[in-house]
Image 1 (cartoon, helix red, strand yellow):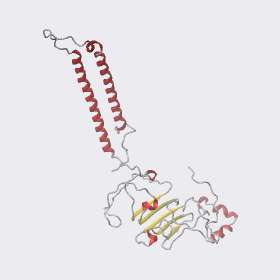
Image 2 (image 1 turned 90 degrees about the vertical axis):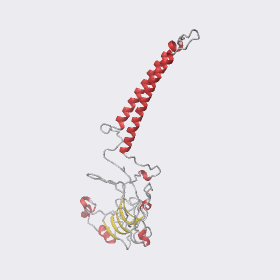
Image 3 (image 1 turned 120 degrees about the vertical axis):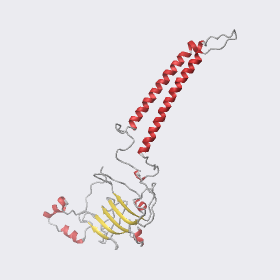
Image 4 (image 1 turned 90 degrees about the horizontal axis):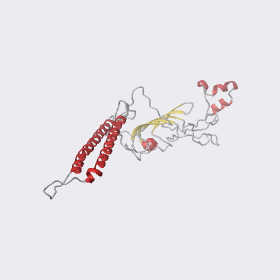
Length: 315
């Protein structure tokens, strides 16, 4: 997916007077070697960074920076390090300041340059390390179940896409130490996976083995219910037979009366037979569905829809 249109950049914009003069006076034979091909220099727009007195800056030729200073997420007054607080050292690794967002004219009418402050929202990609900062607030991160950390050390990675690759395994571990960087006891925190930065419907991740055991027990009890209904049907059929064939004692010399014609010949047998066939059919179908459910979701050896991940785990 393309996010920006191709744009023509002024080759001398954002350059020093010496660089501008060098470009303007460059020979035609040298121009092909100033286009970035095969690792040659590429003159492109780069707005100067607003470097503060407290900051050491390692600056590349093409809008890449490593800034060593104190906690800062914007202007000279934004960040703990910008209001005179101690113990808030910072390392800020940035490429593409303000990304492709519209910028003010690089060169002002008086010939001086505009400068750019850090922008945690607009800068193209960043790795930010801080001894003490309000990481969730300054990066605009949803609170989740872990909550917003205030006045803590933090490492933050932000870019259009993040990829963490391992040839063997990756562990996300919390509470690795009993105290934080201020030697204060830490609480028990877990891991929040927040898609779309929306924590309005955060739910706990189930433990796969426990969930599997729960469903196995559930299917066991449902199967038991199937057997109970089948036993009930058996007893009901015996009872129906007794009712069908029952007689009363006649007041005439204590002889038995004849059975009910309706139960014996007309309504009784068809109803009983129909009841037995339908319930037996339903029970067989029900048991078949239960077995299919087990094979689909609880069989770790054959099913593609097995409920547990074969590789990833959580506690």
